[in-house]
Amino acid sequence: MLLWKNGWNVTIHSFSNGHIDAPVVTEEKVHWRFTGFYGHPSQSKRKFSWDLLRRLNGLFSLPWVCGGDFNEILCLSEKVRGSEEGLMHTWTNKRDGLANIQEQLDRYVYNDEWRTLFPNASVKHLDFFLSDHRPVVLSISKQTLSYGSGERPFRLEPFWVNETDFNDVVQQSWQNSVVNDRRKSFSGIATHLQFCGASLKLWSSKRFGRWQKLLGSKQRQLASLYDRSREVGVMKKIRRVEKEIGVLLYREEQYWKQRSRADWLLGRRKY
Image 1 (cartoon, rainbow, N blue to C red):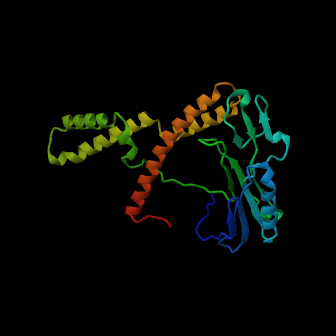
Image 2: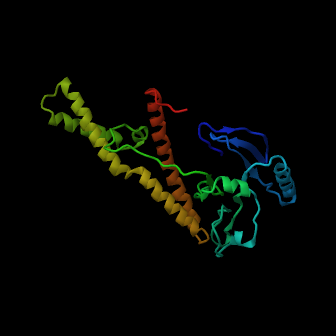
Image 3: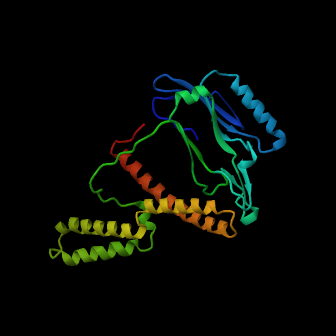
């Protein structure tokens, strides 16, 4: 996956089952080149993959970075079996105990001109999740996210309604509000809604424990389990935690879907 910001021009020059080659022009009119690469999984045919890289290398004289699944290790330390220890690996056969194998198959390589152009570029290995490969993310600049201060207004999150106790919380809070509101008139509906919203915010905090933080905790737990994936029985725990993370990611997807829809309705959609 290649993501870029507005103002950059990315052109697909060529592609095949084993590559995508894309010259890039930044807002400052700086030219460089990205190639996504996939080495042939069959060792007998991998020569064709290396020939492809050689041909691509001769097409341009631009700063160049190439990344992807090369399906090849560079040295023996990039492959471990069973109880052996090694470096951070990007592929695993997801087998248990001594049958577990891990290899460093995914990487980015670049020429000196590209490194000079982006001296702050960094590579981050994400966690295995429902895949036998780690995502390897190349960032060429740092991004700072800012958030507004103060308490966030109440918003009903779509995934709440899928919780078994959601209706009970709404009904109970509404009844309590009616009891406390002696007027019991139409003018009290706003008060009931405010009371119900406060109850749901409290319920959400307890029910999900700030699910974003819970998601982070589960992801750290998954990373820790993969560090022990060569132990007998750990893969079963990994599959359980991956399932839990899947549920949390679905909630996150619903959260951002609701946010993007609200922004679109208010005319804040960004292009």
